[in-house]
Structures are given as C-alpha cells and as structure tokens.
Image 1 (cartoon, rainbow, N blue to C red):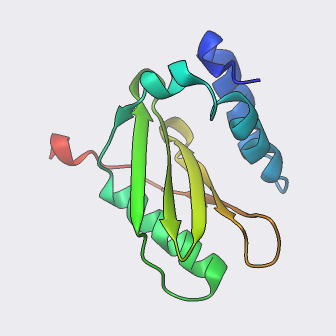
Image 2 (cartoon, rainbow, N blue to C red):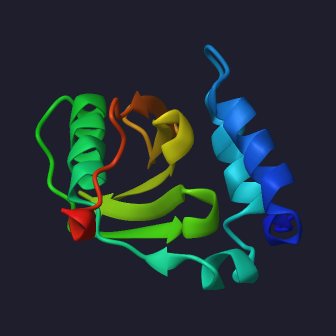
Length: 137
C-alpha cells in the first residue's frame, strides 16, 4: 500500500491497464487510492500545474454526472512530469472529485465522491489531441 514511488513505471502501468478496462473503472480508482494517494514521495515529486483544458473537461464530466452545470469551488492539478501523468482533486457542492490523466494515451478517470447514486461515480474521459501546455504557446 502507498508504494507507487518505489517503482513508478510498474505502478503507473498497472493503473493505466486498469483504467483502460472496457467497463470496470472502479478498480483503477481503488488502485490509485491504495498505491498513490498516501504515498508522500509521490506527492512531493509532483509539481502544481495549471491546466485549463483538463479543468474544463473535468467540469463537463462532473456536470454530466450530476445532471446540471457545476463549478469547482477549488481545484488542484499536479503533474508527475517525467511520466506525463496528471492527478489532483477538486470540490463542488460538498463532493470531492479525484482524477488522474495519462497524457500518452490521452485518457483519464474522474471519481465523484459521494456519487449521485451511491458511494462513488466513476467516469473515464478522453482528450483527443491531449492537453495543451499554455506555457508552450
């Protein structure tokens, strides 16, 4: 548990594989919670990042899950740059949104906790063309 930083390629590979499963996205979220979220080294090696494109997509995903337009009260996006892996959290209407995104496959997962129909709503999303880095424009 909480050992992702001991072998990032291995743990990110497992997470990516679980995320890309055709239907069972919750196993990816559970793996992220178990192996990444409590790993202090993982957090320390991640840099705070501005990503308006990712934030826009996350807002749309959560709005769809809640069947209304929402705004995030706060959000934090981080980048584990050597691995092109984004992760973070946001909050809206008393709910937490956890997310992660793999730039190399242009795909991510968002989990809304609590969900609208249970403990957690999980959605996979794609960003065709990837995330544009505003610092490179």
